Image (tube, rainbow, N blue to C red):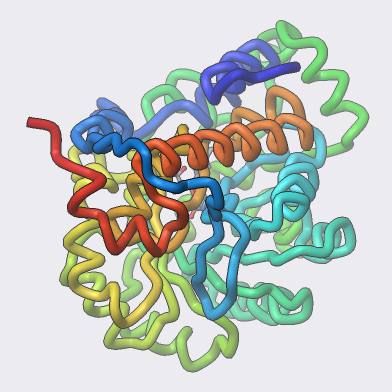
Length: 382
Ligand SMILES: Cc1cc2nc3c(=O)[nH]c(=O)nc-3n(C[C@H](O)[C@H](O)[C@H](O)COP(=O)(O)O)c2cc1C
């Protein structure tokens, strides 16, 4: 399947996936206003076109977590991705590594981290939801160390379970097994069913030794949401900082005060993120928050960004506003659902071209220059 842009990938996913799983990717919390704002607010920033500047030698590399990176993209944590395609995480990670970018496995990913490590060589990050069962969290960290995860990402915006109304309607997070009604709905997408049957039972394999938390991904989706520890505080993050010797990233920061706490604790990076509008409906868009976070802590740690990244132009805007890299969420989830590894590779290449075109037209050759000249190349729309 050939995509001209991310919307083609979304349409491919819509055609391929049973509605319950497409809506799980596409949906957001309550009225979905923050998810919409994430996309719309990119339009508030406009590029200044500059002509007749020598931009023959353009570079899209960036630098964060102490290393040079060929592209400013990371495949962010997406839970339950095994529903989107058989071995979806392996396919996405291979595409990421072929492009030279990291892949972050969700705590609620389907593939076991050791199997993922065996399947691909590039940088892997592991994302943790801190559960009430801290022993379980600790065991996961030991395994993440053993597979030499480059970074631990602790997501902090999900301690309180939110509601996605599309999931409510479809029964995702209430159905614990395939009922006759769900089976009928799944059968409307026979290609998906055929793939799922060959891939075997879908469950969160990192939690395979914990049948008390569910034995299928559907059941785990219902049970695990309730196990996230709502009593967690900055003190716990400080303890994780002491415990984890690798790079530590906090995901889900939406204001300068919380960013300052991250800096105080000495984390290596934070992700400005509202979880794609899937948690607090009515929260500010990610891009509107980015400048204040960069101004507070941009000289102390690496600021990463996600929320609404669908185009290379969005990435250029985020880097002009001070992000060192961006995490992709839905865009690659659609692509892997639509066309597996090839789909993700295509999407990454589209984003690369879109970034390159944007940089060239604003008369900038690399991201360093972009940031230095940000006031001249990016303006708020009048
Ligand atoms: C289907 C889906 C599942 C997700 N699962 C997780 C997860 O397990 N852990 C996490 O930290 N973020 C998760 N996220 C949030 C993404 O990592 C990211 O913050 C968000 O998708 C970015 O917004 P975007 O989709 O508009 O690009 C998920 C997002 C989606 C769409």
